[in-house]
Image (cartoon, rainbow, N blue to C red; front, top):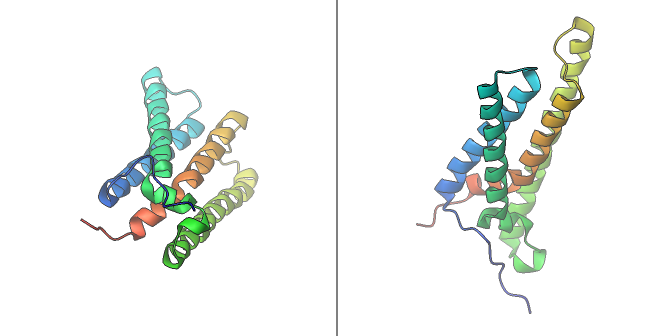
Length: 151
């Protein structure tokens, strides 16, 4: 019989919440900044790269944290309440990512007609990377924000 899952990292909810804000901000600024700025100065290029790395490391930390592991634990290791919380977090994650990507798609319609900025291939890959990294951590982030401090 399998026992409870053992998370690799155990962040306090407050820490996970703060990390989620910092990681999402870093991902947004780093990847969107790289996509929009065609040829930034070297210092800005390095700063955006560091933000991307911080966002990625933060997303991975949130993914392997205990709330992220709760989001990824098999059904047999969770009680009914935990399964319900996990399932709600995944549904909300799906909705957030789909709405975000649909909004980005809707932007392209007037952008093409009106000559607004549209990403080339490399910046588009950056933006898709930001969506993928965010979707990795989002269920754990939602669980952290919905969790109740036990301290």
